[in-house]
Amino acid sequence: MSDPTDDVAVVVVRRGQQHAAAAPIAAGHADYPSFRFVFPDPRRRAKVLPVFFEATVRDAIPYGAVLAATHGDRVDATAVWLPPGGFPWTLRRKLRAAPAFARVMVAAPRSFRMFMRFGGNMEATHRDEQHWYLVVLSVRPESQRRGLGSALVEPILDRADRDALPCWLETFDPANVAFYQRFGFEVIDPAFPAIPGGPTLTTMRRPPGA
Image 1: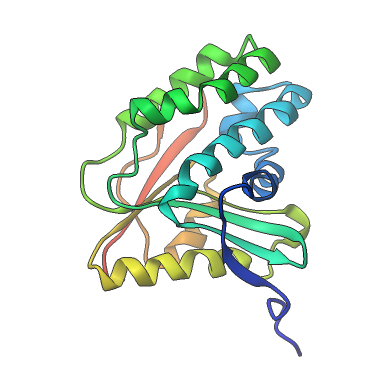
Image 2 (image 1 turned 60 degrees about the horizontal axis):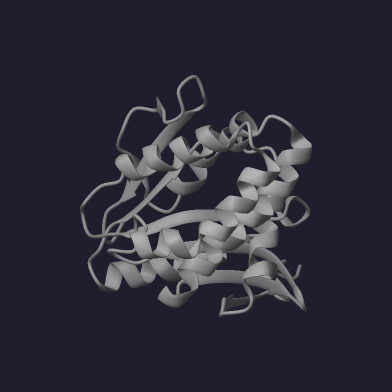
């Protein structure tokens, strides 16, 4: 039996490719708990997520660790990693993303205040320890269970191990916890609502060499 990832290439996303790289993230997060809570109208959510994730990818590209699993011309999965010191965003990076946030506000004006509060709460929970940060990992729904997520996680874990650095991530989906535990991530904080009244957030850390 052939390996389902044989025809998949893992590439580093470059400047100008942010739109294609953001597409599988938006598709994979269409029903993600936090976004479903902040943007309950699925039509508005479908407008907001591509804009937000394209800005997320664009911001991370200069760090050289946005990875994509491609099949031909199509991007099936994307992982946005930031190196030590890459998160939270600096004021300059936030200003650069301001046009994207303005588009989010226009698309979902009633949800925008909660959306910005959500972002601020995520920054407040982040640790000062030097680490690699997995901002987001997503696979198109129709391309899942093919090992694409693993293919986008392992290269940075290897790099972190070589540099003796831990890795961090957060997830609002309890189903993701077991997936990341396979790579040595451990739950380090009790789940808590990063959005008042919303779904709970689980923080995970992977020590070097795990």
